[in-house]
Length: 210
Ligand SMILES: *[C@@H]1O[C@H](CO)[C@@H](O)[C@H](O)[C@H]1NC(C)=O
Ligand SMILES: *[C@@H]1O[C@H](CO)[C@@H](O)[C@H](O)[C@H]1NC(C)=O
Ligand SMILES: [Zn+2]
Image 1 (tube, helix red, strand yellow):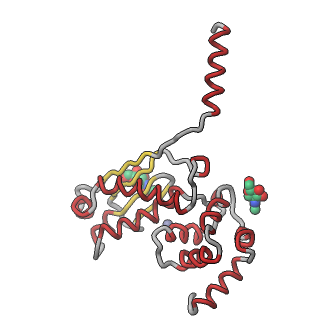
Image 2: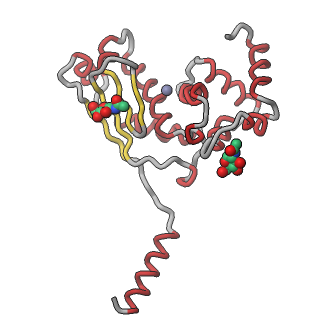
Image 3: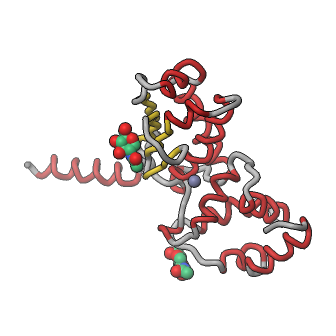
């Protein structure tokens, strides 16, 4: 390569390096259970177009709640995928960027299936986009944050809501701290009290909670 080209290439690389990388998340939804009753119920009451639409909406909602307004604050996700799949077990399983929803669960659900499915995807997609302290955060807290997205009534989600009431922005701040690791001391740093004390005060305020 002649020197001028080499220099040009260097300039281009330099420029690319400094450009913010815009990596839009792609959304994929596949019904792998079309031949099973749950897969058929999915097609009738929910559908792939609806799934793709809410995946995007939920993704943006999660970033909003965690106050991750700019790209560099966010976990990099390439292709978020939802599979409707015939298997016996948990309603849904999230592994990395993939959420598998049980067709058997959809088949047997009594009530408004679309609503249930929407809530379920709020929870599962939170696992795709949330920080988990590189695996160091307790499972209960990770689950609580996922339920917090659906304003579920799980104990941890309610406790997080209580903490949010003490210090608006707490959930987002805690989530941000969980990018690289986890320590219970994060509660002291954000709310000035150890988590055990906060939990006792929460129980004292709201009574008979386990
Ligand atoms: C999820 O479903 C896909 C497609 O059926 C499958 O390839 C994958 O192994 C499943 N993942 C888990 C964690 O069960
Ligand atoms: C967690 O990571 C941050 C940022 O890398 C670092 O400053 C801090 O000391 C770490 N804390 C623990 C408890 O490992
Ligand atoms: Zn979960």
